[in-house]
Amino acid sequence: MGKRVWNLNPGPAVLPEAVLEEASKAVLEYEGKGMSLMEMSHRAKEVDKIFKDTEADLKEIMGLGDDYSVVFMGGGASLQFTMIPMNFLHDDQTADYVNTGSWSQNAIKEAKLLGKVNVAASSEEREFTYIPKIFDLSPDPAYLHITTNNTIRGTQYHFDPDVKVPLIADMSSDILSMRRDFKKYSLIYAGAQKNLGPAGVTVIIIKKDMLERVKPGIPTLLSFKTQVEKESLFNTPPVFPTYVVGLVAKWIKSQGGLAAIEAGNRKKADLLYGCLDEYSDFYRAPVNKEDLSWMNVVFRLPSEDLEKKFLAEAGEKSLIGMKGHRSVGGVRASIYNAFPYAGVEELVSFMKAFAKKEAGIGV
Ligand SMILES: *Cc1c(COP(=O)(O)O)cnc(C)c1O
Image 1 (cartoon, helix red, strand yellow):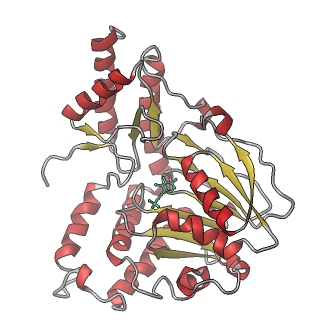
Image 2 (cartoon, helix red, strand yellow; image 1 turned 90 degrees about the horizontal axis):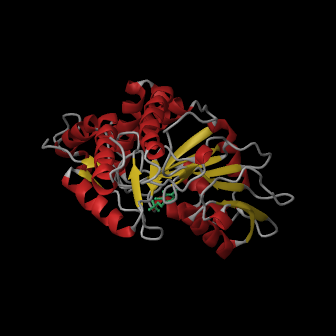
Image 3 (cartoon, rainbow, N blue to C red; image 1 turned 180 degrees about the vertical axis):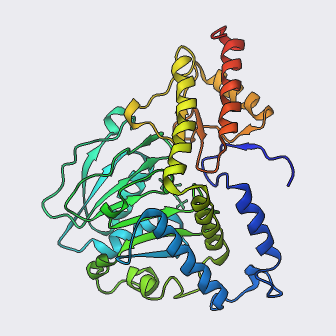
């Protein structure tokens, strides 16, 4: 492998080097079978084992048992915005959503195409700079949907809501980044390309009792019943991306599981937010302190011109992918599980030098 850059992209994003090396071998030949994994039938027993092992490893990491199934399918997290109301929002019901930014809004928009929606809480009035803690649920909602990490705004739930209705979460950008009480959730989904693997597969962890709630008459491929009963193999699934998700799960286990991953992420976030605090005359983090994301660190500089200069000079130091989302501007450093601590150290020393050079701040 050549010299790697410090990849701070929001997604697709950095993957562990050990995973890339292992995956590259499977591109050429898998398990001595004389063919690439990409050339292998999805009905082959080796592929069946990949799906079963990956499901088992993910459930083990999350502390989930036989009452949950894992589905691997295409369509991105965005297809789940549609599939969830399509499957679970019955005609006489309302679905509750918490609006914490663009991805929540996209989920709400799709649900509204399919049924009645109640926005149970929103942080829109303060430009999505915090996570609401109190939800105004409708009387008997089909479910409550939340977005645990807001990739664009840099906010994150540092708690798992206590509700008596089925709790559904888009965890696309923070799945397996910290310990959570995953048993509180009836359905969790994540596009793989932020924290789990390459683009092309979405992981859906579904509590089996949810299947009883699936509406009749759902198109076959889009029914969670089909996906669970056929173990993701109703049609040809994204085999190679799922294989890489399996390697990432094994990598997480080898690191010591979620407790160790969480400790590493906390350390990285502390270092970077510590720098923002120390240099608050120059760098400004707009987010409420207790809701700061450990995955996507969003900040502003005194002017847009300085932000442009910052991004250009960071790029010269191989610190790439920090341009804020086009809808909000600014700077965003995405420091997912696989982003090394040494990269955050490098970023922080660049930030300090930049503040000193441009504004004479710091030592
Ligand atoms: C990136 C992202 C999505 C969209 O994922 P796709 O797989 O591109 O559809 C949805 N939700 C969140 C929180 C995201 O970060």
